[in-house]
Length: 375
Image 1 (cartoon, rainbow, N blue to C red):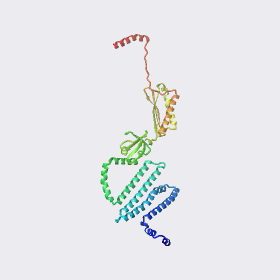
Image 2 (tube, one colour):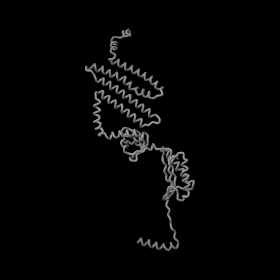
Image 3 (cartoon, rainbow, N blue to C red):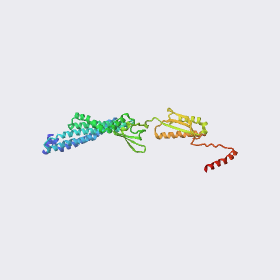
Image 4 (cartoon, rainbow, N blue to C red):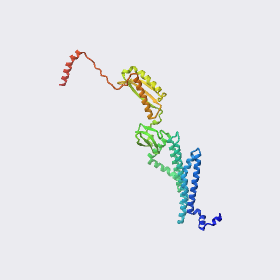
């Protein structure tokens, strides 16, 4: 080895003796380290694809870019220190702080990427709860951001004990100044933990004009897409003061109809009621285990009213209306098969007839009375 080095020029030998303080050699070393990392990454990528676990894929994908950045930025920081030391006689203490900040930043960056990868993977799984997954991911991001921020403050020489003491007093002041923001934050936490609804649910409130599909649950507000496709931005604190219905969690949908039969078909009402009830009990889309009522319910102004009360098996809005249409058509067919008719609003005028002689006798008197009233 020494014999090989003896053939090199003195300038090169001098450069090699001070390789750890030469910017060019440090840059070349960084390039070689980056090539080595790319080779190692390609080999690891082949290995992790063959495993049954997905965690190793997500970890490897998360650290790929941050490590590449670290390989270039760390030597660049060292080189910057050598260049500046040649121009300044004083020692550059802030370079050590810059290196520490670089390490902290790379760690937080890799952690954020890993959390994002885990969140995206969890959202693709079956039987997932989107709201819980997103909530845990947000809390994890917030936790590491706070830890990183405190570490950076400590790197700059700030005492955390004093900072926490100030935070206790300052937090009280900020709490009064930003009470609406904090109420929305804790309202979002209430939604995450109580889970009255989740992303994708259809919700409505009888207290407010809120109805639509939940698109996103944020820390400050929830985005609801109304049925006419308008976005509705609702502050989270609102949900702690109103009643929220979640039709998406219904077990059944109800069919409740009052059907009128003509008074002329009163003798056929019992048979019609019996056949309608039998039809509903045998219908494949009607849940016979739930309440099922078909009764003659009362005398209407122009009809004999039948009450039909039952529940469908489906909760899907579109499918429910198809089932309801089929039920109503079958009821109409049953009524028709018994030569009965569905009633509609009618009025019967009764005219009393008088004998001809009496009518002729009373007509002049009635005409005379009408003429007298006119004058």
